[in-house]
Length: 356
Image (cartoon, rainbow, N blue to C red; front, top):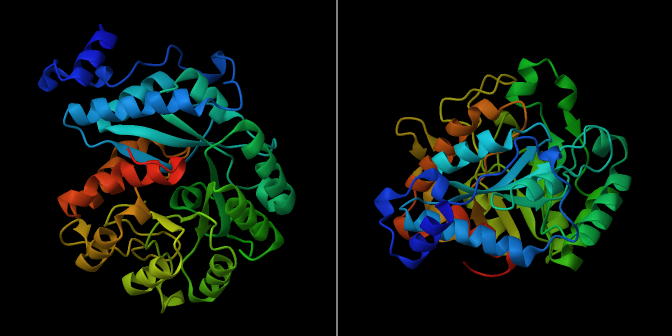
């Protein structure tokens, strides 16, 4: 019955007001992703894109604004069936699923996720997370390049260069995440060069501080064709360490470097970073719960350079609905004509070099 409803929705013959979450796409048949064989590689992106595109079309036909989450780090413990229902309820069309290796080398979690649910997950390569990335960054970058090519991943994950402990890590007493690897280190050069040569995008976590901006600009200038997604627009955890970054500076970067993109993840306006006791989300107007006008205008002027993100990890899945709500507050702050671009079209174009 769901397949029939989906086909009718696509043809315009099924009343959209009767659509329910399960009509968006089939549900996974298993809860544990490791109960299925890993997806064959290289991934068959033509088939997967048909699934993903159909899911987006059905959501739009049902009056839902689909969201593509361009950046999340998830593991094999995820309950796929329960989470599929939550994604559909919140209108999250796709999640870029980057596996967490947990010290075991490369993770194949994304292959399991795509095999079990080929409708909701875009496979992303493992990001540069500790301990592997910290222990041997050049070796990890080398393995990343090899697996991205051999397995046909459409994007790389998030690589941490300057990273402060996240709020949930501080709450768990995990202070080891105060880490620094220069972005112009040999591992950084490997990633930028690989992205430039392959056209495959990768994500960076680089805290916003004056001292790190010249390094990043140097790499962007040296590798102008590298597709770089700077995670967490305007997330500033220690205010006194920045005197440069703001909407005018970001506008300058966008105009100067044609392959620099930003994800829009942020905590809620009232979130206080426990390390500094400051509000890190600098694009929020905390009186309205929407974007400050200058940030909204920046995004509206360059919508193809910004993408929604949820920044999920296994420790904060209970925050899923709140995170989606924050990204929808961002979208609601933007002019109507650009909302679709930021919500899902920009991510699709960046990953697949085509418009949807």
